[in-house]
Image (cartoon, rainbow, N blue to C red; front, side, top):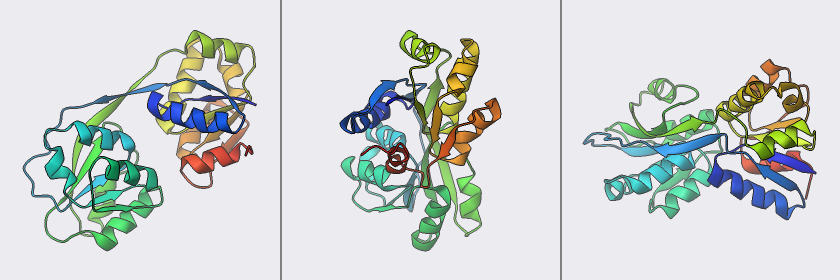
Length: 236
């Protein structure tokens, strides 16, 4: 089996290593490049940090006020983000199950009273976490600490793989990377070939651009995490 992984580079290589260990041939196409953004969240005080991606944790590790921010209680969207936060020096970390609804429930049940929460976020976000928490009487301040820059064309290796119909599957871990995949395919005149393999998506939202483009073989993970994505491939 040969598949294409479309995550940003660091995450893509980690996923590729796990797939190769299962005997899968992997081609990597980082269609998003993550860049830190200099952000001053303000003086606070803050009751806790909210983290919804490992990219936010990486930005935290580079922040000039890292020590003070890492000392706050942390609410992380899932186990992997929580593990990254602990590795970055955060000691009081609570993890959700990988989705925004679960994260909102976790925060609503456990948030310290008083000061607002500080959300270290990406420039592009799905959903409105601030509004969801406001419904529970909680105030969230958002500080953009990273952005994703989208690729505009496939690498020659990926283009050749699609043109030669040598891929059996493509893994998509976000709506934006899935949209970038469709856009790059259109730009290269390869949309039909790009939509032909099976497409494995971390969520229905990630699958939406592919469905809109006409992909027929769409598979959505039962849980929005890497383990569920790999399990969909049926390789052990």
